[in-house]
Amino acid sequence: MVENDEQWDMRPILGATGQAFMGVKEEEKIFFKRNSSPLIAALAADGITPKLKWTQRTYSGDILTAQEWAEGKTLSKQDMSSQRVIDLIRHVHESNNLLLTLKRIDNRVCKPLDFIDLYFNELPPSLKTHTLFNEIIQFLEDQIDDDFYLVDYVVCHGDLNHHNFLLSNHEQLYLVDWENVRIADPISDITWLLCQYLEPSQWMEWFNNYGIEITKKVFKRVQWYSLMNCLLLVKHYASENRYARMNEVILLIKSIYNQVK
Image (cartoon, rainbow, N blue to C red):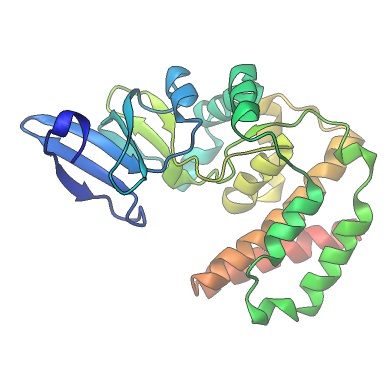
């Protein structure tokens, strides 16, 4: 039961862990989601997500948001190096409005040691004793210096996955699923994408298209967050028993680590 006691036919959306639905009533469709990021209103106002229609607390205490239903398709893996994707990510990172809004909601900043804590949180036993991964974690801890803190921390999506980019039938590109949003180094967001979708030889072109000058200090952060995100990806794939994908990331980890140690 939602807005004005009107009944909607709520149809679960596959892969949304029971939190997202397509609501259908007569000829109208709406995207419903339970407990979306409190940032959703600002994101919708900025055109980063579909327009927000209303937000309401349900009888069970959940917060239910209703957004315009955008017919379209999710992007492919090959699309993740397109200029449209890069421009949208940069728009998020450079938005002072989003940053001020998120600071009012949650002023915590995700710094390098917080990423390491995230890795160890509910880490599978098989990874806890992994010699190489533990060596890399020690290396990452030793590498942290002032250069990692004297940067502009921005709004980061936290899961730049091709499934989270929606291209509407009207050619509007949206970035959805903001449950992992955080204030962090933008390099942490970007390398999460790069480690999944591009060969290291292609990274420089992506950074150039984004508009980042790779100085020595920036390069150090790129290497650090690349290794960190690779470890987080290994943890993610291990939890889903996706061992082939996990092994691909391990090869990338070894390649990066052998260059920096």
